[in-house]
Image (cartoon, rainbow, N blue to C red; front, side):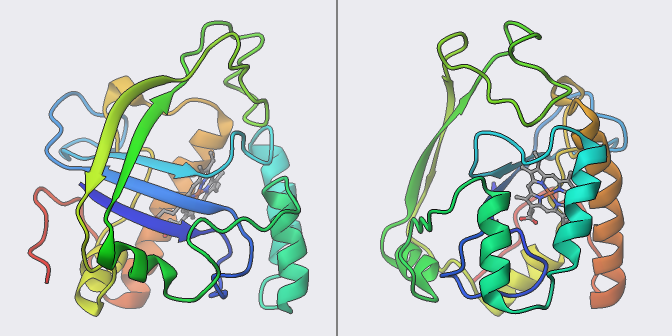
Length: 220
Ligand code: HEM
């Protein structure tokens, strides 16, 4: 399994700037019928963010939000901080690993980590809509169910070699999936096109081919 942390803005920001935080998982060697476009691969990705809902109900509204966000890219950090706070639906600055640059690397050098993966099952389409990604599914109606546990040992979380192999040599995409996990809704359909286009662009610009791994690369 490969695990990757990320932030939303396209430009490099100090870790103390509050933005939504992403977590992408890539499971290797998963057999089975694939979702459209994932034929031939044996990976299953989960591309997650640390909020209960997405900031926009559907792809059309998301485009409007993006247009606004694009006007702030490369502008001063205080403005970006404000926009990011709105994007994550909170004005609070919560940092899981403290505010210092390099905190994530320092943490994993010593401690490793453990996560319990939980899902909500859709038991009622009216109160748990698939077409509106901005609605929080009521836990009273559908409590989270634990489906997996991830344990990682203490390790070197970042190195030039790891960045080349993983950040540049791989792409995380919810459509790298089994047919049984085919993503649903317009936000997810928009992601299909956007992630493929971005991976292609990155491969071209970095002059580094991107492919779906069949085995973990040997990393220092
Ligand atoms: C539920 C909604 C969403 C979540 C949870 C989410 C989460 C993430 C995460 C965690 C990453 C970083 C992946 C990595 O580590 O490489 C990412 C990348 C990305 N996201 Fe999203 N995202 C969402 C919606 C969208 C939408 C609607 C679009 C555009 C239509 C989009 C476009 C992208 C692009 C272009 C990348 C970069 C991919 C790459 O460089 O290979 N995302 N997203």
